[in-house]
Length: 284
Ligand SMILES: NC(=O)c1ccc[n+]([C@@H]2O[C@H](COP(=O)([O-])OP(=O)(O)OC[C@H]3O[C@@H](n4cnc5c(N)ncnc54)[C@H](OP(=O)(O)O)[C@@H]3O)[C@@H](O)[C@H]2O)c1
Image (tube, rainbow, N blue to C red; front, side, top):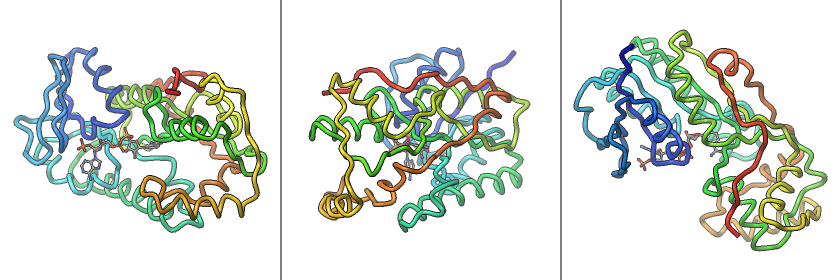
């Protein structure tokens, strides 16, 4: 059967670093569109700037950039000949809309608006869409979530928790998210649906941090602090640009379950995340 040429948006991020080699192994032509030039040393992969129209019709697309960016590229995708699009969103849109923190509510709103755009645009332009909502994504030491925990452990030798930190988590590996994108694009019987993508293991926030200690070869040190200590520490940290979006809401969520169901993705397109959380060795 003829394999379609695939266009990929946002491939320079963590998920893209797993998706592109995966797609390359399927013998399909891939064109990666991004603002900055990316070079892949793989024959079937080419790069084009996101500013110019595609040089030929591309019907099948995977979007890895934040879903709220998609509206900017709706006309562009139509001009490229898009007929089927898999786009990553986030389970944050299902939980952060009720956050006490205005920044988090804004993120949830932007995600919801991006999803809503895709539904409307897809219906108007005759483009089949699939939205995939991963939970917290981790990689092999190069993500922005578990790497931050590892960095704190390395710097302080301990990791501060609020209370017992028993909120449940389902971290998902970026490679499993990449595989889900490819499988969903391929599953032609699946159209106009949104799916959650969770990791294969559900564990508490505390257990997740203990796993990071284990990974770093350190004895777990998890002292519990009251909220006011976190509030004080955050007020100091937030003047540093890298930490400006760290909030008390994030701290309080240590005790809140963030659990989702991805059985529909398993059933509909064979989603198969790895069973265990963590991880190749993180840097010390
Ligand atoms: N990290 C998590 O825990 C998590 C959880 C759930 C869902 N997600 C979602 O999963 C997806 C993949 O995550 P990721 O970390 O691999 O990707 P990412 O770093 O958030 O974004 C991937 C790429 O998108 C491009 N991009 C970003 N903003 C853009 C804009 N305004 N216009 C054009 N291009 C833009 C950038 O590429 P160039 O600069 O090269 O153009 C960037 O490298 C994202 O949609 C993210 O929202 C992440």
